[in-house]
Length: 350
Image (tube, rainbow, N blue to C red; front, side):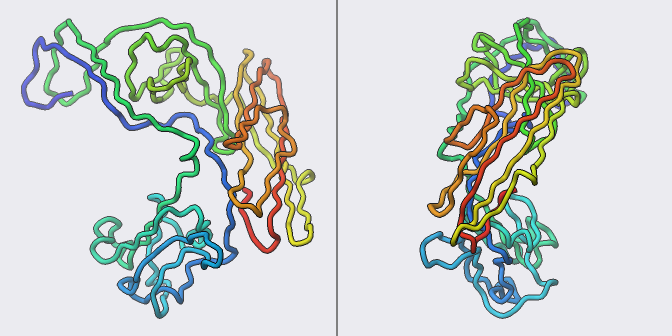
């Protein structure tokens, strides 16, 4: 679009590469690292001043032996509910009760905003100050992110007329017919829906650029996806959208889950069942993913007791099943893991 006030007549267009923001694709599991949680809110009201100016500093729990636990914000005096600060974790407002349940070992930084610094960003909600928390990235040791730009440009020889009306104009650069294989993808822990993916081979020859893509499937607009040509994989996966006809349900089996006490330790076993059904009239290929937790502490032991026939990536704790379902076929998959930890501590296994 252009709004210069002058219509452009018979202009030549050139499209070059850029680095757009990512768009919502099918969900991807991240490693689940276990750590202790505290049974009571760690934000002790006695530790906070009745004025946000009373805060001296804020720091996360160090994790060192003998160190105090929880998110400690130092001050003096007492605080009323009406004087409570606002809590923001990774950009999302959070209640004081939720904030108190944060695992201190997952906190990267804590900053306290007060006065104009708080209200200029958060408005009246920040009048009593804002506690801003940034959490650590649990997969930073396993994932490498590439933001390399592609030095590709498309020059259009045919002149175009672009009126100055502020409306989007579309120019077709080229069209390809590609051999495509379809599969379904589901991560029931993160999203109850199944996603239809298109696998494109030999995509390197297309000179694709990273960017948002409109998906039109069987003549119907189904949503947006994101094309990432910086991938090192041989096959390019495009998310075509959700399909309610391929149903996946995840259920915790209480009869096969248990809690035992072994001396000073607590042994907790959790069993899940995944139910998959193909309500389509065609046979479908499906990739199903779930996970089990990983331990970063010596006194927390995790054992995968049943993998349900999955491929197990032990480095990140991700289970992958590749299924082929006939029309109307249902499949049940069960997996289980156990966690042993000191009985006087608490961990979140949801």
